[in-house]
Image (cartoon, rainbow, N blue to C red; front, side):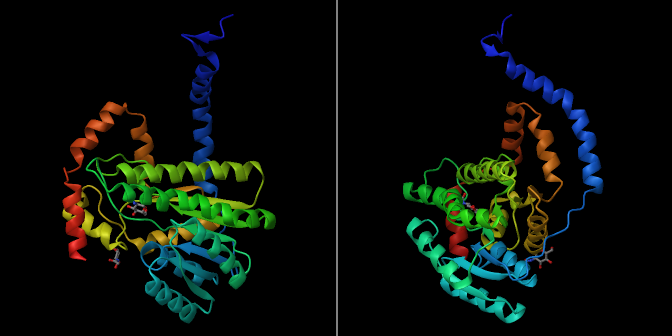
Length: 318
Ligand SMILES: *[C@@H]1O[C@H](CO)[C@@H](O)[C@H](O)[C@H]1NC(C)=O
Ligand SMILES: *[C@@H]1O[C@H](CO)[C@@H](O)[C@H](O)[C@H]1NC(C)=O
C-alpha cells in the first residue's frame, strides 16, 4: 500500500480529515464551555508582580489593577522619573510595596542584574507581565538598521530573556502567572505593520508554545496573551491613528478597560484574548479565505502612508 500521495506522507491528509471530522464535536463542547465555564480569578494578595513598561500607558494600568488586589509591584521602565511617579502613586494609593527600576530591557546584562535586585528587595516573583515595547510602525521604507534590531530585541527577545530568568523559581514553587502584550496585529494583516506584526506573531507563538509546555508538565503556571487593537492610553497610537487615517478602520478603544479585563483574564488562567473580543471570531473566519483575497482587501482597506514622514510628524507633535 502506498503510504504517500504525490510524495506527501498520508498522515498529513489524515490530519486534515481528523480536523474536519472532529470540528463539529469540538464546536458543541466549545459552545457549552463558553456558556457554562466561569473560572474564578485566583487571589494574589501579598504576591509580587514584575511589570515591564509600567511607567505609563497599558503597563501602568496593569500595575494599578494588581495593586488594587493587594499585589506588590516592581515597576520596570527605561523612563526613570515616570516609573518613580507610578511606584509612588501605587504605594500611596493601595497600601502595597512598589518600587521603580530603571532598566533597558534590550540589554541582557541589565536584566540579569534587575532579576537579582528585585528578588533581594521583594522575595519570590510569581507574576510577570511582559508589556514593554517600542512603538514604531514600519513598511519597507528603510529604517535605521540598529533600530530594526532594537525593535526585535525589545518586543520579543527581551520577553524570552525575562521569562527564562523568572520561570525556574515559578516552576519550583509550582505557582505563577505570565502575561504578554501582543497585538491584534498578530492576526490582522496591514501594509504598515511589517516589523511590528512580525514581533507580535512571534510573541503569540512563543507564549502558545510555553503554555503547552506548562500544561504538559502540569505546572500551575498560567500563560496569557493579550491582543488589543489601538488603545487610547497610548498617545503615539492615538496620534498615529489620526494622522494616518487608520482611525476610521480601527478606532482606538479604552485602555483602562482592557487592563482591567486582561488582569482578570490572567488570574482566571485564560489563554489568548483579543480586544475587542469579537475580533477573534472575525479573524478566524478570515483565515478561511484564500490569501490573495485577504491581501487584496486589506491593501484596499488601509490608507497609503509615507511612514517616515508620518513618524516625524508624530514625534514633532509630542
Ligand atoms: C513593539 O510593541 C509595542 C507594544 O505592543 C508596540 O506598540 C510597538 O509598535 C512595537 N514596535 C514595533 C516597531 O513594532
Ligand atoms: C479612553 O476612552 C474611554 C471610553 O471612551 C474614556 O472614558 C477615557 O477617558 C479615555 N481615556 C483616555 C486616556 O483618553
